[in-house]
Image 1 (cartoon, rainbow, N blue to C red):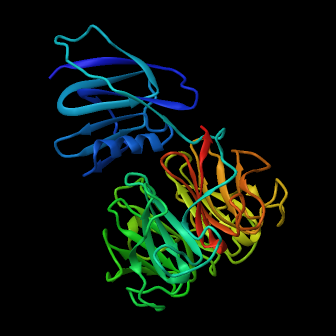
Image 2 (image 1 turned 90 degrees about the vertical axis):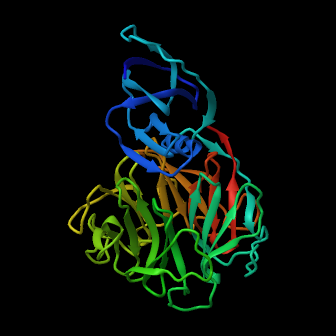
Image 3 (image 1 turned 180 degrees about the vertical axis):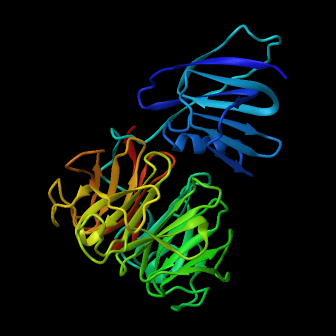
Length: 429
């Protein structure tokens, strides 16, 4: 074994990412997260999707293991290791200091990828990637009926949708959209058995590719195994009164599952994905105090950038932020809206969901205003990035419920009452 000291020089790429690879070497240091049974490309995708928070990784080809590192140090320590690759990004050059006895043979490959930032912009006209462009509902495997929650798998470029009016969870590829969907849960009539739904709302996937579904009418949070289908019976994780959207934190070995309770005015957390739920936000009655929520719908735990819990506090027309480890006794802060219902730049009206980018900017599905709003960190006003009027045209929405980004930075929106999924192409990184 021999040691090499690398000096990494940072440079600007104008909103893009330079990725390089050195074979047969690994980084020595504190590992932030390890992933198993994934390909090297999937490992790289994890690094890219962090938008710079994760800047270095080790990949071991023999057992398909990925080690991710939070590191922006000016230098790192590595050692020779066969059948491995050290992969890093946003570095323009590597200088190998002359303190090694034997040099190694290395190879370097480079590619360029764009990522979402607070400066990004999107086309104002969308493509319907699933469902009816005209807004018609239906039950065939090419149509939807009031889609609500979504989950995007960037490794396979597959979108999963809670097709609530059809009491099913469907999945389809974005590689050849529009395509015919596959049912992965439900579609067995209206009911509360473990192979049925009454009104599925939120969906999420954990680190073991298990599917989680909240059923608003049944008060269930159900787990389905990987590669489930319409014949699969799920397992009850727990009961929550009128559960809506779900967020899963994959920062731990055992993922924490966050579920909104509309009626309880609370966000519950299943610690480690098991046991009885505990209150993570709200739970102090319906109200507008900073430890209260009013008929919340959306939740997002940001474990990559801000390590905080965000809640779409729907009837208070605001987005609340709570620190990591929050409980029923925690007071949050208002980070968007909170100025009464309306369509002003400082207002929201029935916000349904929220997500965060690497800069801390919020992206909000502003339901009644039929728009997606972006609020920069610490801003007092938002900007409409798509939508803003009600209708079925390609630049219009009708009560958007969930917004996500795909691996290319395109914006995906569940356009609920138009019974379709819209894609707004990324135009500026």
